[in-house]
Length: 335
Image 1 (cartoon, one colour):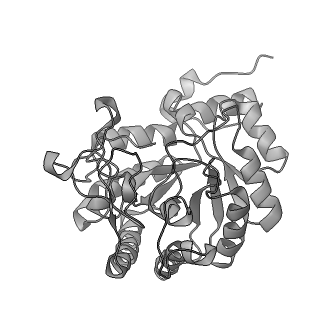
Image 2 (cartoon, one colour):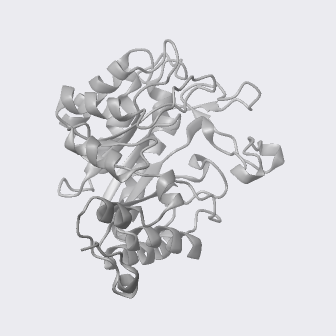
């Protein structure tokens, strides 16, 4: 969950406490928010970044703390594409244009996300090569900073998702048109990432399994993509949805995205993670026991309760190691 609390991409004490709390709270894996591989790839000026060597020392402090408390530190590498240069959510979240102090967004095609937004600049082939270079450099910095898992953010209407969907990609070159062309950039980025991120370390890809819009990216497309990603040494598909089209119609209900995880897992054999309105321990456990996912990913529920994993373990009758400093508050089973 983006915290919109960085300055020039630099992490600070907020991020240390925020991410560290989830490790103390029993999460097995703590995935850091969408972290931009370049300044123009930020959603907002408050986004974390990893485009500079200067970003690494504070990030290393955060990963060290997470690992000290029994969790695994992961990072989500991201580029916002046309959904860049927006104000902080609590300030209204509107696009900030160049003349008002923002920056010009880039995208597969010069199609704005919102009707009244400034149109993004369509990426040239040289620009695309730069993006691949940025992801490779970000991967090297992620290694230096101590992350053990990388997740490439290809969901929620950000850059890779913009390439996937025919609703946002109107290109006529090798990066547009056919399904194979629209997924090309992601595959090329995975290749350069895997050149330096060894196969001993997990690589996740987060996708939006559907645009929730007619003639857009579909669940069938996601199954097809996931099968290809399995052959590219991707270890897990993080199955979310939506975010690419402002007129999307999402039927919200508890676990509304779990079926995407189940279908991709069944059809391709790749590991999947389930996410989306998963808020209760038994609900999460049932998803796992029913074989609908291999991993439960929590976002808003962990904002509400950083200690959800510890509470869930107690509720389900399992043992969980509490931090020594908190053992005196550990709930005990009634005899």
